[in-house]
Length: 278
Image 1 (cartoon, rainbow, N blue to C red):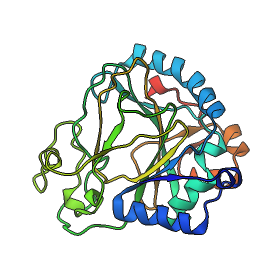
Image 2 (cartoon, rainbow, N blue to C red; image 1 turned 60 degrees about the vertical axis):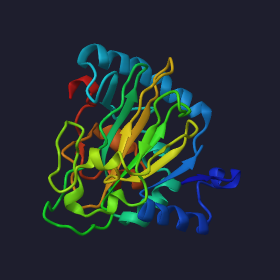
Image 3 (cartoon, helix red, strand yellow; image 1 turned 30 degrees about the vertical axis):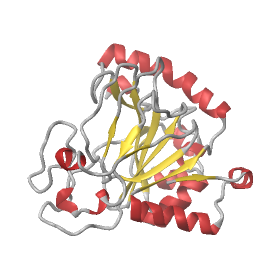
Image 4 (tube, one colour; image 1 turned 90 degrees about the vertical axis):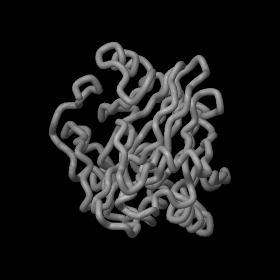
């Protein structure tokens, strides 16, 4: 579902109560919500100007890693990426808090970029089962937040999703199948061929919040420009990620109270880690 915000909601960084309830409800029931055009074109241009040369250097050093002409790249914890409006946007946090509680934490600070010439990914979810023998769905415990830096269209490789309950099949039906793994309890790639899917079209500066268990895949970028998503992950306090965000002490001290709480489990007092240092 795509939700259009009023100018007042964008200015005040607050959803009307009924809209907030619907947004939370949609993630619970359908797996995701798109909040269209939350950020300004100027902020997206600033992010692109910082991101593009860094990504070019990353590809030169490390190459592609999530498929043909497609790469996941961790972001350094520095401006303009670590702006409070990215880390703790009040509208995004109101939805996230409503789903996984106010004591959640930010555990992943990265990006996903299909370049021109990228191909289809395998259908996958971004997590393996917590309890492989459990056949009942668990409450939401991890959420992915994406911010597209350019308009997402049919031509530039939109995210394709399988809404309507793929995050609720039961824990043992989860699997990160991107590397060709087949879950014996649920052949995700085969099953998805016969299920309803949607491509997510949206404006640059939108916010997508989705349950990390939701099935999805990247599609081919047939345009002549990269389609970059900022990608953050917010978890319930007890769930880790296997990654650590390195944050210099002076950067951490400058953060607002909410950001400091969100990042409380990360590596505070360490130098910025550049993408090619992973």
